[in-house]
Amino acid sequence: MMKINKRNIISAVKDTSSVIQLLSVATRFLIVIMIICVIYGGATQKQISDNVVRLHIVANSDSAEDQDLKLKVRNAILKHMQEKYPNGATRDEAAAYLKESLPLIKEIASGVVKENGSNVTVDAKYGVYSFPTKEYDGLALPAGMYEAVRVELGAAEGQNWWCIMFPPLCVADANSLKMDEEAMNQLKEGLGDNNYQLITDITENANAPVKIKFRIVEIVEDSKIRIAEIINALF
Image 1: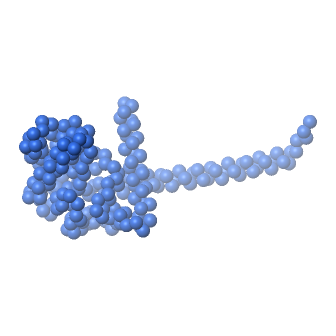
Image 2: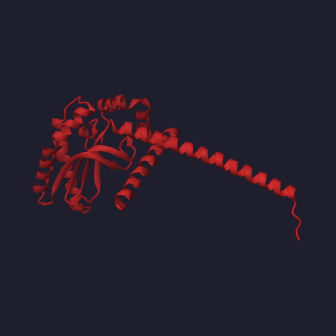
Image 3: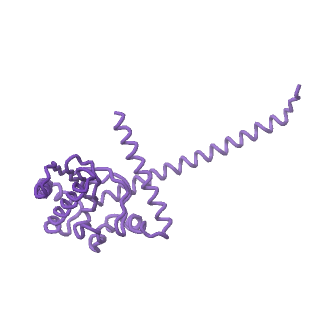
């Protein structure tokens, strides 16, 4: 029979206990870090979304005809906005204007659809919708929930087109979303220096700290959206 060495057993138990304690401390540390990331990500995205209103146009399908129609609808809506958008409006004033304009937006989109010989239905609504991370020219918005004007064409199963209605960035330039200086200053004032830097400096390749913080917000909010989708599918 193998002789049991009590001293070795006691030593092994102590070593195991130390490892368990170390793992426990590391686990608690990771949990704390995760909680901090979730709080930071949620608070940051909310501040960004509270200072932005987006435009979301969804094509009937991915066919060339439907995608072309989507862009024609976009052009017509933005042409109207370039003429009628209230200059100098606050975020709340812009949101109120856009809500009031929904019947006209729908009418404009329906006119374009009819002119192009299509019979797809048109719906225009204002609400809070999930968006993936979207990078524009010199500006990126992390994934999350944003207030938006949503124009749906037909079955609304095609590729989408996004832009920013407040500040009125896409009103200034529908194709490239050129960074209008006045609109960007308005955005900076609402977000504060840190969050403004987060969404504008993310496009600079060498800015690692900003990219890490942006990625935290992106992961947290994208996870929330996916969890919500799973719950909705189950119930």
